[in-house]
Amino acid sequence: SVLGGKPIGDVYLSYDRLREQDIVLKTIQTNMVPFHLMEGQEEDSNLFQQEWDLLQQIEHPHISRVMNVGKSYISGFPFIYKTMPYYAEGSLSRWQTQFAGRNSSPSDVARVILQLADALQFLHTRGVLYQNFKLTNIMIVNETQTMRDLHVVISDLPFIHDIINLPKTVESYRYFAPEQWDGEAFTSSDQYGLAVVAYELLTGRAPFQGNSDAIMRRMHLTMPAPAPSSFNRQIYPFIDKVLLRALSKRPAERFDSVHSFATALERASN
Image (cartoon, rainbow, N blue to C red; front, side, top):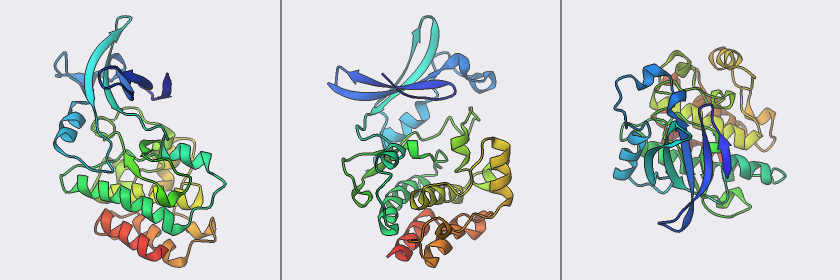
């Protein structure tokens, strides 16, 4: 059954007969990938291979793994695929929608951000950037109705997303740091994206919203982010200060690391 879709592929709930468990199957039609991205590739190459290779070497409690990669055909159309664990509780986006009426305190949000920052810092020490922030890419591992008890993982390390400029959605642009619009990315760019996630969890909205990439670009590059406390009275000035620093237009003005940002947010929230 279809779980979701992308501009060039789809995501399915499938059953793994060998493991006897439900899994997620993510596909990309290779005939939909821009030609210059496939030029020079082997016939049986798989754009998911880099993610597979990395995740076979590392393991982290807040990074979802890839179980298998491959290539196949349907009605003569070639596609590549990867399989991943199925999280029955769905994404953080779905959880937020399901429990929208519940108030999550800043300290509860900070707990989730610490988990994500731990995963990002783990990647950064290995020279890997994430750059694929969306609430739909943050999966819930456990069943709970309180944010304080959430166990989350990040999914879809984007070796084939931002690096090779595959089509994106307007949702993705909410998390783009200013420098990413000019084709640059640093560890502090991931910090910016994580700060947008924190902002969204605390206020119920991203700091910048628009219906086109041009509008989003202008906002991220030129407009100061509104203070989170203007949308949520539970947010203290110290939290405003931490989040707005992580959302600085200049990478050098952000925190030294994503871990430093998450730690500062936790202190400000307690």
